[in-house]
Image (tube, rainbow, N blue to C red; front, side, top):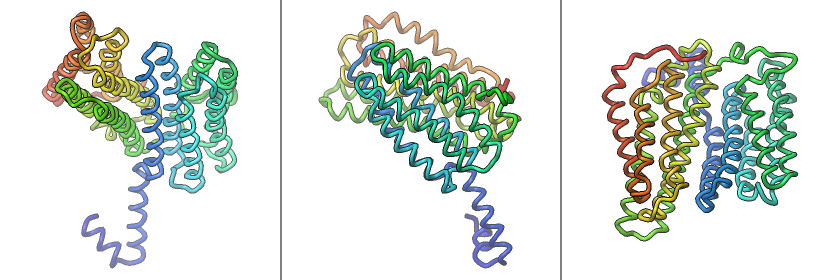
Length: 405
């Protein structure tokens, strides 16, 4: 707080104190509240839990199962972010619902390991209850408004998806997975189309406004959350290994992968996102496209966390196909998400990031010849090159208007 602000608050007239209080409240409204940050802690556990499940059963089937659950949990997080922007989570009526969603999300994450076994119906019922319960709660708690109208449209799509979730919970084996894939596809399609309904198909971005600082900070926090999970995986796995040269090298390489991923993210797009949102003509549309980019990057970072865990566990062994795909595919997926973010925010692609795709494809040739830690080191070297090129060329690239079409 500046000296002038403090003087105005402490010794000014009642009118000056009132203006000072209004400015403080406006500043707080522009940033994520403490309940939202507390809510994120549940997703630290959720991401760690899903990553451990795949690490302990590295099969295509298990990976596909956890991807579906990860998309479902991520949708709860994204919907909570948008909800916090539209109805402000510091209101008591909203805060109460936020804590209920937090408790439900914790139960979902805990049930994830058995979601495809005996707890499938339990998982489905909890998930559907979170979405439908939240929607119905706000229909009762909120006064008539544009937000309440939008909530009815979301409820329609979630109600359709709920049928597939419950059917999947009753089915077993592949039938459950297929049914839940359909459910997730319905939910993400609804979000992509802004939940059109028979009584209203007008895109929500024409009626809703977003606070640039709040929404962009929440997206950055999602990335930091995922990077924190990756660092946790590094520390946890190394603490259980022998402290020999190969494992120490693997630890260093794993840390480099996390640090370089963070540096690539914040270059230009991560740093300027708030400013771009503040000047965008259609921020709600921009927010949805940015959310897609961040979901891709978060999924990739969790893949990098899995890479780190498995590389530290077996640094000098042979590199099986599944592990090599994770080591090379996770940074490739991250670069896809990062390139999409660049395109959405600046209307152009970064050639420094696109450079990574042919190099990663070329590294597939050496997989039979190198150990997991060597392959991860080559990937880290590529990311370091991208960081250097970004630092050198990014300041000279023109800043074009956001791609909101």
